[in-house]
Length: 138
Image 1 (spheres, rainbow, N blue to C red):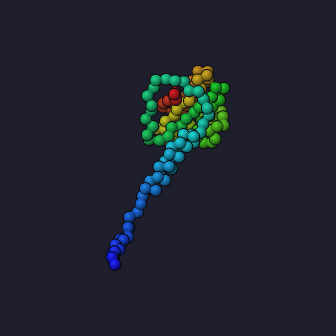
Image 2: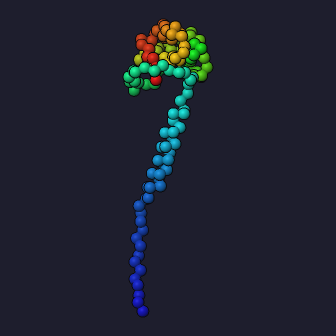
Image 3: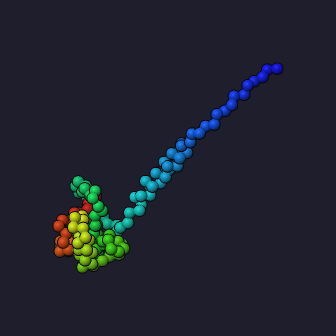
């Protein structure tokens, strides 16, 4: 009779992290795909220009949009998809600049909008106390 000695197995107290890494990678891909879809705003065709991006690391800028029909939209103080009057834009921007004078202001003008509409918006922003206004391009 041949006897075989069975070896006792030691308990393995390590955690297998490979399934957790797989789950995290799937979640990362999901968030990377859906994040660009979450941006809200009015669809405008921006003009193309060879400009350098602006450093906005301190805070989010206030974006005022002029669509093809010359209507104004602002992304603070209400629904950003509802057009507002020029006086309302100046009022909201004035309140923002009163609390944060270094807040960056950007204007998104549709490529087909009359240049005069963009200039009128910039005048309204200047009257509201904006020291500088940036223009958004593609």
